[in-house]
Picture 1 (cartoon, rainbow, N blue to C red):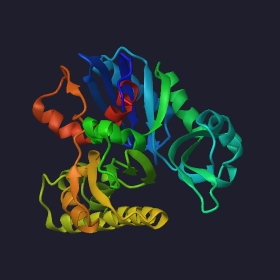
Picture 2 (picture 1 turned 180 degrees about the vertical axis):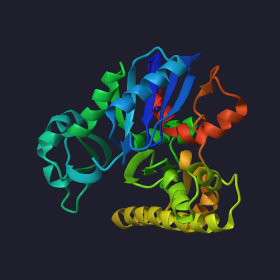
Picture 3 (picture 1 turned 90 degrees about the vertical axis):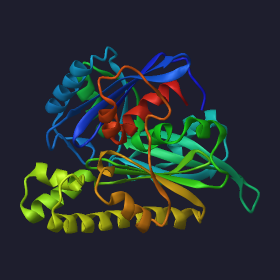
Picture 4 (picture 1 turned 90 degrees about the horizontal axis):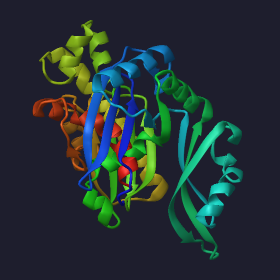
Length: 353
């Protein structure tokens, strides 16, 4: 993780319930969060992480740029949906330059879409020798549907923006949730770390070891699903259900519904971690770091501590940046910090690597 000579970067997080932008630049050699904005979007503009209503989404992005006053137009966009496949694969050793061109001819068996319809990327996880002394690589393969990516590009274009890079939201999280000195020096050797970002409609589960993402999974559940369950079961208004979910309003019957939803949700996450363990025989987990707008749910933190059988801590997405003159009070920043881990991490892609 070393500084680049980038002056400004814009991280754009398009989620189920909002669009968020973080602007980061270098001040005195350190990343400075110079602008930050959130605009809420109507239901069904984004569904399961994909564009459903391009016109409304483009207008929301124009509104976001209008209220923040961001001047830049080129953004780093995060994606997380079922049209992205993330899978570790083992292939014969080759140099990285050769791998760039050869990958397309070696991975069709690993992805459920035609190669010509996919955008491919990869990270080398490790090199190893087989029992027959064959030199091999473990590579984390990422394949995204071109059509899905193109739908976002068209929305950006309609909003007067352009795409400088596209990144997995799961891969953006370490840049904001892991302290910079740890990223520079390496985490405890042999320790795996799990990052969980609970969004409004999608939850990202990322497992890292030796600072390298080894596993990424997207769950089509988030904070809005908790509120919706409370609203539907007890015939409440959305606003009231949201207040109950956040623990700002008491309702014993609603809290029982919420508790069951949380129990089921933590079980899904536990199964994702168990799957990774089964695939890798990993046993040494250090902790779970929690973030996202949906993480601000009554009793979720406590239930994760209990259900995951691992230490859980709340992430601090502002820890690797200096805060510039942002249009928020200290209390407002504390309230929104959990929800901006992705957009801050996306922007840090350009100034810290």
